[in-house]
Every structure is written in structure tokens, then in C-alpha cells.
Length: 441
Image: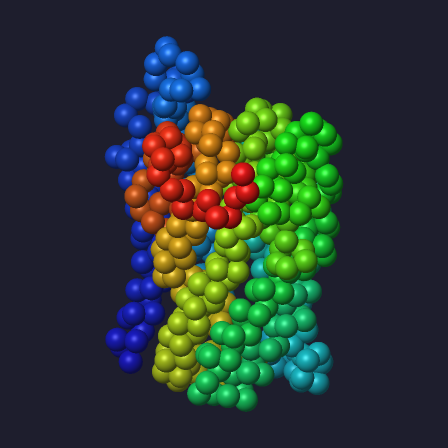
């Protein structure tokens, strides 16, 4: 029993220790001589398009921003571990279970009452931290356009979406665990994969429009170029959208979302203000790589496998852990409604442990999308300059500390991406391209 509790505590603490180590490791791994503005990005005085692009050193503002994030991030993680722990060890979860059972007469209505109270308490107590991380911090570094009213309404709306989803399907894990005490980790893993796929499928048409407006690109000449490029990649013309992210942020991004009939490529309108057409065409080529290479389904399958393995770990630990604390927690079986905070706690702990594996796979598919974008455009200079632009617009560090990249790096570092754009050009030496079969001449 002591060994089980030791490893459970070790898993929770490991992520916190490593995240905190990032904060203290920044001074060692950061740039030696930061400047307030990046130096010129060209390495020679020859034709700029033929010259490799230098990786710009981050300015003081970018480094300060990274410091601020690395200070608040462990606080957020600690709070998300502390809140469900307090709910368990104070007996509040058991009392709330008993109250909701009396008022809601058990069953689904008791579940709804429990979740409403649990969610409301978390929202209120989490509001100051969320306000600082989501509103104050981005404004301090000039990354946000949001008014307070817009931020608050968006936060409430986002939490309402989570609550509705939780009320719709959150009762399922309790039912599955109760009906199959020995195989629930397998069945629940399969259901979680299905839920994730449904979430991605409905997101672009039901959830995303609640927060932003999606439309065809108003810049028709650029739209024609993008659609012509999409046709070369075998993508339908009605799958490319622009979203008005400038309503909330000054950062820049693009992404692929949806599955099957809702699959689409989305360009943030903030990019149109700073990037050239060639740079935007590479960014869209990268996203087209995600689309054509079916990275979203692959990501779902990979993460589902990791989640299922995590479920099995929870299955092995749940009985001994609940048995050890059943008197203090007020429940003795994992399908008891009072065990909901324990499930939340397990989700966070195993999420921390799983993160390096998930991030490694994410970096792999992002690298392959970079490769596809280069093979589609053959514009190495524009590609490298696009990443320079992203680094500066988003206050990114080109070479973040190793621990940060291991745990939180969903993409290759900006420095790695710029250097890859400089070097990868097999078409110039007659070498075959990896994805040439996906691209029309």
C-alpha cells in the first residue's frame, strides 16, 4: 500500500517539479545577450530569397513573457490538483453526494445537481487565477485585444459548453465502471475515443461559431492563390476559412479542425496584417499537410491508446487507494458519485505523466506538415520567414529550455523549423520528395 501511494504522489509531484525546474532553468538555457528587438534575419548580402534565414534572438519582452508563463503555469497545475484533493479530504464531496441524492432522488438528477454545484464552486474559486492568466498577462505583453466584458462573456460561455457536455455524457463513466468493474478501463477507453472524435466533428459547426465568425477570405487575389494551392493538394475549395481572431488577440496562427464533412482549414485574420502572400501560402500549405495526411485521425488514435493505458493504471490503483481512504472520503467504490473529484485528480496526474509522450507525437506530425508545406510551395525563404514572423508576433523563444520542450512543446522549436526550412530542398538535387504522390503538378 505504501508503494502504491508513493508512486501516486510521485506522479503528481514529478510534473510540478519539472515545471518549476523550467522556471529556474530559463537563465541557463536562455539567450546570453537578449536584445529588445531582433537582429536582421539575413545572413548575407546576396539575393535575400537565395540566402538562408537566420534565427532571430528573442527580445527582452519575449523572455519576460516566457518567465511570466513559467511562473503562473505551475500555480495552475498545483491548483487543479489541490481543488479536487480538498473536495475529497474535507469530506465535502461525500456531503454534496448525499445532499444531491436527497434533492435529486439519486439517478441522473442527483448527478446533475452534484456537477452544477461542483462546477460553480470551481468556477468562482478559479476566477481570479483565470483572470490573471487569461486577461491580465496577455494585456501586459500586448498580445490581447479583448475588453473585460468580452473576456468574461467568453469565459462564461466556454465553461457553459464544458458543463453542458459534462451533464450530457459525464454520467457514462460511472455507469460503465459499475456495470463492468474489471473491464471498464477498456470500454471507457473506446468510448473516450468516440467522444473525442464526435467533439472534433461537431466543433467547427456547433461550438466554434459560438465564439468567432468564420468566412471565406475577403482578400480575393490571395484567396485565389490559396484555393489553387488547395486544388494541387486535392482539397475542396469550400474547406478554407478565415476567422476573426483579431477580436481577441494579436497573436497569429492557423489550424485544421473537424472530421469527415466538417473538416476545414482555418486562417487567423491577424496573419493577413503582417505576412506576405508567399508566407501565408506556406502556412496554409503546412495546414494542408495536416489535412491531406490525416493527422487529426492519427492524433486521435495515438492519444486514445495513451488514454486507454492510463485508464488501466487507474484501474490497478483505484481499489487500493479508495480502500485506504474510504472512511475519510466517504465512499468505498469508484462508481460512487462522490468519487468524481478523484477521477478529476487522476485525470490531471496521469495527464502530467502522459504529456511527454503525447507532445513527442505532436512534434512528429507538425514536422511532417512542415515538410509537406515545403514540398507543396518549394519556397524555403518564405517558409523560414513565416516562422520568424510567428516568433515575433507571438513573443516566442526560438530555443526554449529542454524540459519545457519535452513537457509542453507540441511543435518543434522555432529554431529547428527555420533551420529545416533553410536546408530541406530535395527538388534542387533531383532527390524524390516524400509526399510528391499527394501533390499535383
